[in-house]
Amino acid sequence: MKRYLTGIKPTGRAHIGNYFGAIKPAIEFSKQQDAENFYFIADYHALTTLQNKEDMIEYTYEIACTWLACGLDPNKVVFYRQSDVPEVFELNWILNNVTPKGLMNRAHAYKAIVERNAEAGVTVDEGVNMGLYNYPILMASDIMLLDADCVPIGLDQKQHLEIARDICHNFNLKYGNILKEPQYYIEDNTCTLLGLDGRKMSKSYNNTIPLFCDEKTLQKTINRIVTDSSLPTDPKPLDCVINKLYKLFASESEQKVMDEKLSTGIGWGDAKKELYRVMNEYIAPMRTKYDYYMSHRDEVDKILEDGAVKARKIATKTLQRVRKAIGVN
Ligand code: TRP
Image 1 (spheres, rainbow, N blue to C red):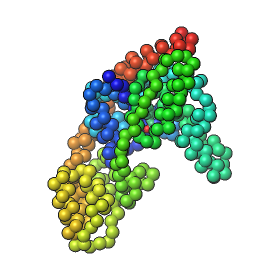
Image 2: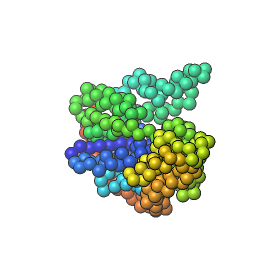
Image 3: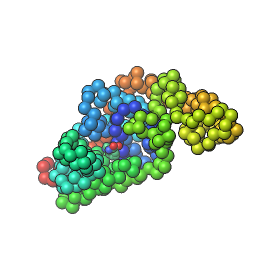
Image 4: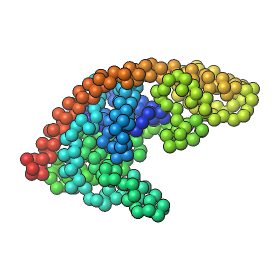
């Protein structure tokens, strides 16, 4: 039985790029046989930048409800909140002491800020708090605390996993083979979605389509997709943004019909209407679940609390082993 673990940062409303790029593959991944899955909400990682009480509460529920609505099965996945497992901080402190400071200096996220500051001519550590600086050590703690065999991640997290493995190695070199060295698995999601303006769908471009919003908002958002001024009777390119999005939500026969209409000529307005129809049909059942969970927060709390109990069972054992190894027990 292999144990998979991954963290999900609560960073605001999910968009359909997040859904196809991260949420859907991770949920499908959790359905494989002979595997134990631990997925947690990394609220204390979010704290490095998310420093507002209301947003922290809201984003945490939003992300939990999103994953549940998209099909995360709490019977198949131990789903918990990082902040409900305080053991992570004891391990975090211990691992601080086998982590060379230079390793943190080289972490991409920190280095990027330092370089930006240098270019802007301000002090290099401007805007860097210690949480941000130590972020990779907390990640290593999340992983090793649960004895994870493998961590499924996106490519952007690869360096963090290399760092976690380094930290594990340093600890084991000193104290014996105590911590499990985590492998990682990079989701091969070549699926980069295009946003409303034809660039990559990303919050920083403000061109996203929210996964869960009311129907009117969805319709309005789709209407904002940038098109050209060709006439309804003009043929349209099959690789236009509308058609690319359409293919994610439509059945094969619907896709064929749309391809045909585009080649022979269809007004952009009608194409958008048709995109809205299939998208809404696909999302509606999940949206209903999302709205249900968002208005039954006690049920979400219960799921996360149950998850934390299971996670802590493993966490306390790991910590006992570690404490004994370093001589504090
Ligand atoms: N840093 C990850 C992200 O930004 C989230 C995360 C926190 C994580 N702890 C983790 C991922 C442990 C994998 C394993 O998405």
